[in-house]
Length: 119
Image 1 (tube, rainbow, N blue to C red):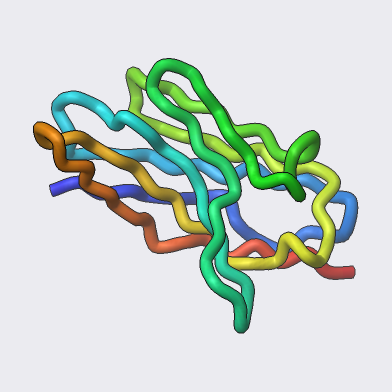
Image 2 (cartoon, one colour):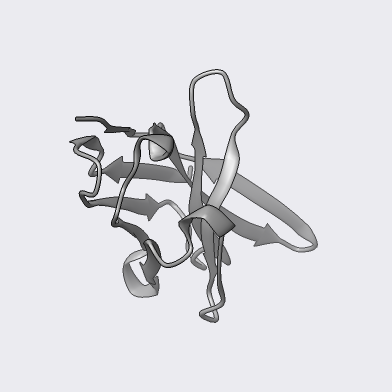
C-alpha cells in the first residue's frame, strides 16, 4: 500500500517562502515520477511541478524561477521550495507519485497541506 505523507504548509506573507515535503512509502522499486499539484478555492486542480527519476523537471509557467522541485530517490521524498510567494499561490498543494506496473502507470496522492499567502 503506497502512502504519501506531506508536511510544510502554512500561512506566509507575500514575498515569503515555504518548503513542502512529501515522503513516500510502500513501493519496492521507487517512484518513476513525483510532483505537486495545487487546487485553489473554486478552481480546478493544476500541475505545479514534477520530476522524473532520471532528473527531468518541469514547472507551471507562473512558478518558474520562484519554485524549485527536488527529490531524494533513496528516501522516496520530494520537496517543493517556494519563494516570492504571492496570494495567487494560495491553494491546497497535493503531492503525487507514480509507479509503473508493466505498461500501466499508477498514480497516488497525498492529503494536501494548505498554503495560504496573505498579509
